[in-house]
Length: 348
Image (cartoon, rainbow, N blue to C red):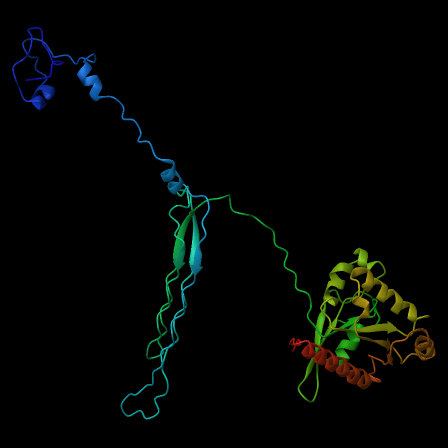
């Protein structure tokens, strides 16, 4: 018998299969049955289902905004030890392969993830496989990806990469004092040399080699000017290279009047840039001793300053050996100081 909502003009209809009744376009007893929406029984069955109430405990479990996760990368596979033992080959030699690299654990941001509830408290990367025979390397461990929600958009940055010259000694002086010529005479470096200032715009590093195979790195710092600590010219770009030098070689031009003023100005610029920079171990080099005026100014320079002065000529090589010997003394003192502190000195 059909539900009471299916009714014709003559009362209840005889029983028929429901599927045929609904699909058949032929009217029953002269009229098409109508669908009643006011039936209480049918409206009850069509009520919207209410959402299941989730407890606060379950809500806390479903939404997690922080996790403490321990992550361990995969271990590299062990190397395979094997020796080639082919027939009629006496000295086969080792043919083992290296082990594979351990796998990474990578956090992968996913737009579908809205909580950290699925993140486990521990992740172990896959290990690399062991090396095999016939020089076969082991396979690398597979990467493990952990899906996490997106916190915020990806960051965008402009990175300024800066390499400060790492040398034992730094040649410090004003433009056209002869630093580049001196570096060419001391080492195999070939910086540009000309009769006008600011020939050197980038630092050059030359290596001074001694008979006991020790090597001392000397950097030709581009010429400073007054106000370099205020970034006049390319002051800051030049001064930053002097920070890494362990000892300094001040180069002054003996041919100009009052050459000791050059030394005072150089130390002032260094001290204004970084306090204590001018107090590092040093030696004063009076260049251009081959000129007549330089030989007159040399004793005056020694009277005005308290540091040791080595007079030489970078052009002719006069008295260059004295500088190289004193440079080695400064280097040996630096090495001894670093070793006494338990640190490793910089080697070239």
